[in-house]
Length: 429
Image (cartoon, helix red, strand yellow):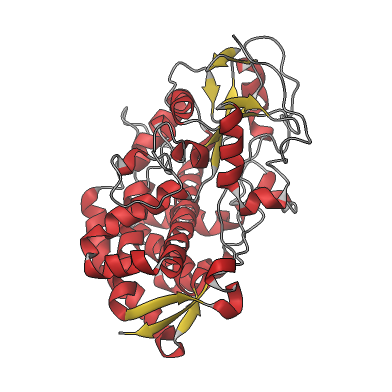
């Protein structure tokens, strides 16, 4: 029987604005899922999908029912048009250019998305990633050297963000002289509860990188340098046609931004687990071959991306819930990856659980994260080298309180899981 009733405001907090949900997203989605794995929230009218099977159904749909045009910010800001009828395809196409992030691949649909994604995916080869591993190990150790004598560091800025930004810069071929400046230029993530800068809710939130990346593409079209940026600058679609350089530069900007952001969050959250769970840290020191499994369970239990969004182009149903055309669908990667129907005892951090890679931290379907292999590599190398260089890693109680009363602050963003600061102490090896 279709469900259509909205939730009442007193029963559930507002996912998009309540600070407590920022701090405790797993608990929020568990509460929602316990009531129903698909249901409408009362504040912005989006449909919350918190169940595993239901999330996979939406994410892997290929019949054009769901659009990715709202995939980053969901219902905020609202659609620039009033949906009419059971198929809003023409309305969406007419207004797409007015919507946030729509200049970038993450919001493309259909054949347009397929062609551009195939172009980028062909460049992120196993050989290229493997060649990046040696640089990564040297990078991680250089970063550690900078604070080794301090016996501690602030992980997010001094280690995680720097590791991921320099790593994607290296694999893309961004000039060495530009890397430190780009590290400083990348600011807070989009979809902040406290409000966004105007450019972050426009069609191209990475517009501040435009001139720089336009120059990268044009210079490599003139003089290829054998790096990923050169391959992208001279890439062709399968039919042999060439995208305009402006589109190639947009793709380069998106690859750079997405390539550092998710991985930085993953590394920081993994180190938080090491500090909070001495038993897990001790096991990884004794069994370093389990670090890959540790990364997967970190991704499952607290994913770097909490939710992705879809827009119903056509009226449909999701798990029996009526979904009119124009409905924004909040697909919870956190909720799905902690669904006890698929992951027994989801609150347990279990590196030995079956189906470790069944989680949806990197989404699923045609829009699954193409950079997942790179993120896994960077996180694994960062943890491997950090454990080699230390004898013990501890969360700083001066900054975060004792183990039974930790205090962590998260960036006020509803789409992403961003720990704002993570201070650790360690004994150098």
